[in-house]
Image (cartoon, rainbow, N blue to C red):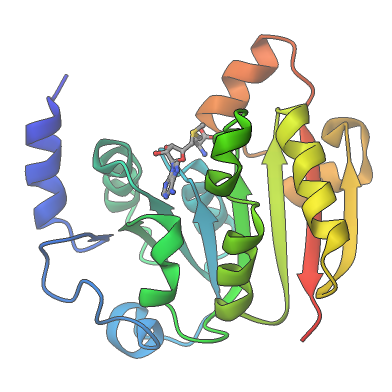
Length: 219
Ligand SMILES: C[S@@+](CC[C@H](N)C(=O)[O-])C[C@H]1O[C@@H](n2cnc3c(N)ncnc32)[C@H](O)[C@@H]1O
């Protein structure tokens, strides 16, 4: 088992990890197609990606699209980026930043789809602003997603799910909001491609029912 220090040292050498301290960090805004992927394939973000199961799973399934896992924890990104390198997944990358700062990394409309993957529920009222479905985060996603782009959320947490629905329903710039309190008994299940993240596995084993929602912005 490698320690965090070794993982961070390896991340520094990996071209598929974009993180503070590296040349190019924060210079990719509006330039992912020309300067990073070197193609104009649509970009999907997996936010709060942890170990990056969706970034990996989707990049295996769709080689005509690009995928970027975003998380603040470098040791988790180390895992996903290592697998992407082993499998030569050239359409997968990992960005280490706080989701709050996505606008520093992506230009208007540069992203075509966003997955919010089992984000921390932050149940305390005083932490509502830190939930990644708080309106201040929704304003960020709106800036970087292309017209008609889909935002999707998977979570086990009923409190976060209900909160997210309330926030979305109260906004006037959201359309096509669809959801299920039981993803795997719904038609949306097929849209999730049978990819199961680490946290999802843990919660399902504990008997939690997975919830799902998706929406678009009115542009
Ligand atoms: C509950 S874990 C879920 C990880 C993974 N998506 C899964 O389902 O296994 C939440 C993840 O969100 C990340 N995270 C929390 N707040 C964040 C923020 N503001 N910016 C970036 N990452 C964040 C954490 O580091 C953690 O990896």
